[in-house]
Image 1 (cartoon, rainbow, N blue to C red):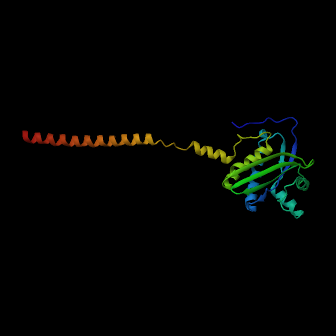
Image 2: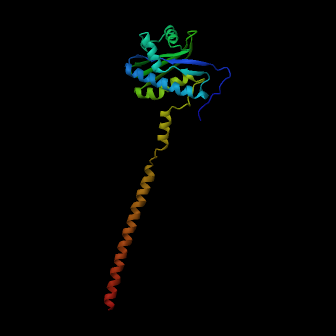
Image 3: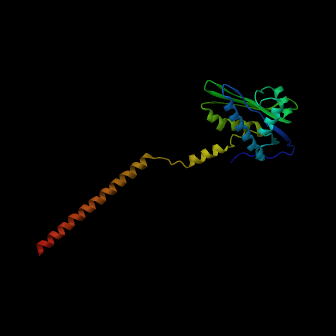
Length: 217
């Protein structure tokens, strides 16, 4: 069962913008893919109001690109509080998510935080590291970043769609027991041998019967 959070009476409505993660040691394409995944997961959490205390309205990507285009800016490179405040005002957002994705050796590091545009203060931050392929960062670490930033508490039990699919696959996996297989094969072998013996015995009896009949005549 997933943990659920009851809505508080003093919850507020906020406009939230999620900027692209600033790449450091990874390609711009990879950073954009991770950023899109973060936006998508946060959007899912916002729709599931039982896991979010405050109510959010997400600023969509096309809207952000259009506004940034008017100011001839790019949706990247914003990692400081002052920059977050300026970008938040341009996007008319109450809160804004900024962060970085870095590759150091074989370890990926994703750091993100929510900044309140009015006060310029960091409301919440998340920091995750993973050593391995970037695919795992996309599937597991990015959703956890979203959980830590948006939910009222860390939802370690809140599963993403890919996690649920993986659990379904595992539940359908047939457990292989070599001992059982050996017993089944042994029984099958004995069964076939017994049939062959009966057939041979039947043939002998038949021949013996006809032999006796011929002699009696």
